[in-house]
Image 1 (tube, helix red, strand yellow):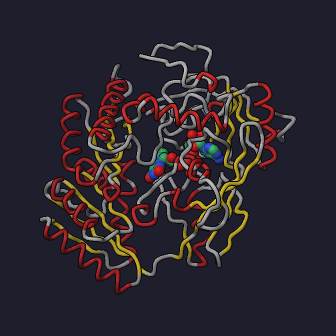
Image 2 (cartoon, rainbow, N blue to C red; image 1 turned 45 degrees about the vertical axis):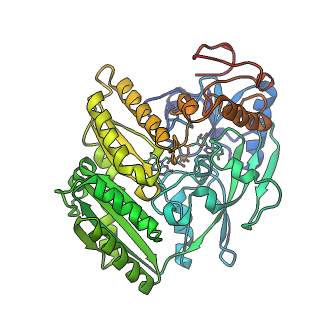
Image 3 (cartoon, rainbow, N blue to C red; image 1 turned 90 degrees about the vertical axis):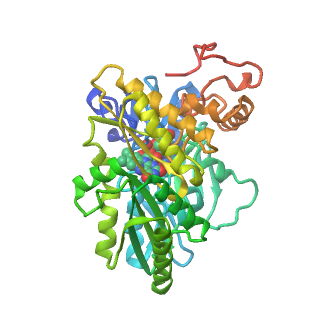
Amino acid sequence: MRDILPADGVVDDAAGLRSYESDGLTAYRQVPLVAVLPETTAQVAAILRWCHARGVKVVPRGSGTSLSGGALPLADGVLLVLSKMRAILDIDYANRVAVLQPGIANLAVTQAVEAEGFYYAPDPSSQIICSIGGNVAENSGGVHCLKYGITTNNVLGVELVLMDGETVRLGGTLLEQQGLDLLGLIVGSEGLLGIVTEVTVRILPKPQTARALLLGFATIEHASQFVADVISGGIIPAGMEMMDRPAIHAAEAFVGRGYPLDVEALVIAELDGPAVECQHLVDEVAAIAGRNHAVSTRVSHSEEERLSFWAGRKAAFPAVGRLAPDYYCMDGTIPRHRLAEVLQRIAALSSEYGLGVANVFHAGDGNLHPLILYDANRPGELERAEEFGADILRLCVEVGGVLTGEHGVGVEKRDLMPVMFTQTDLDHQQRVKCAFDPELLLNPGKVFPTLRRCAELGRVHVHGGRLAFPDIPRF
Ligand SMILES: Cc1cc2nc3c(=O)[nH]c(=O)nc-3n(C[C@H](O)[C@H](O)[C@H](O)COP(=O)(O)OP(=O)(O)OC[C@H]3O[C@@H](n4cnc5c(N)ncnc54)[C@H](O)[C@@H]3O)c2cc1C
């Protein structure tokens, strides 16, 4: 690695490696064999070529905020960190595209174009630090994705280095693509198919006005029905987020912005567009809230007030950190009309497992983020929290939803994949992996619950958790 990279591009001392031992799923830790920080696509290609020739495993890492353990290192693998590749390569305002290196932080893209009246729409709550390359790998979403789409709807092209060191370009700068949609395959592929070394994204003109409503409801059912009625009424808010009582109280104690404390559910709905249209939509949404028995309604009349409404929601995760020594953030998606029922069943599971839960979520997309409260210092609590979380995800699938909304499968949900997919589905997905990385060297042990050599695919099954191929990489 030292032959390929400058001296400060290789980290192999124990203290330096320690800082890479985990990502956002901090319950899991593993110090990598070595961490390398390339600065160019050519260096990435050289690293992969070297590793490929020697059968060395590689784990890609952006900013390490994955909540599903996607960037968890391997003891016998190279951790390839993209954080030094953070340049903006081109901004084309006329065609509304920006070309970026993968390590740039999500928010830095908006900051670079906002003086010209533009922004990058997908806005994960981790946007001050998470990288664009990580966003592509996880197909990340955020508050504004309800109206403006998730990462896959905002990425036009990537440069990708394959495990054998070959560099390919997928997509381009236009909305229309030629040939197979291989770009669609890469977005959300969790670092299993190649290293993203350049990303072309759409940038959008900032809306003329944005206004928010802060709505309190006496029951989760009323709040859920309100959300369903807004969408079925043909209104797509720029964002529509919900918090339950524990989350409201934690957020209010944290930021003190006057959230109502006598309600069971709080919804923040944001409308944007030209001022006249915005006013019309605010009135419509307020009327729908009234019909669904909202017990408190506040409408923002200034930018300061709008931001104040959002302050508690944006700080909700750290705020919930005050409720218990640890929490485990789940991520599953359900059909919107099942919201109330699913939240009730999560409450029942909470009693059953004897662990508290706070809910903060993207209600408009049906993307739940139950935060399971536990204390890792108490023996058995982490395991109980994980089992509770797995039950929540099984519930999401049972009601017609999916295992993940935006945080990815990683290691966290890997063993739950058969809840959602048949073995045939999984075999087909793994054949795609084999087409890109036949030796299974790139981010092994993530996403797929059973591992088999590509040559064996379709012939040999691993059943009941028995490890038939102990030499195939797992951790
Ligand atoms: C407080 C907090 C809030 C969050 N809120 C949200 C949210 O609102 N919405 C949301 O979607 N997510 C959220 N996340 C999760 C996380 O921030 C996203 O998944 C993010 O996209 C990860 O980016 P990263 O740069 O940190 O990637 P990492 O964590 O470093 O890596 C994530 C995955 O991408 C792969 N990868 C990284 N870079 C590349 C690359 N260049 N090429 C190929 N593969 C690569 C890694 O191998 C790994 O599998 C949150 C996380 C935290 C800690």
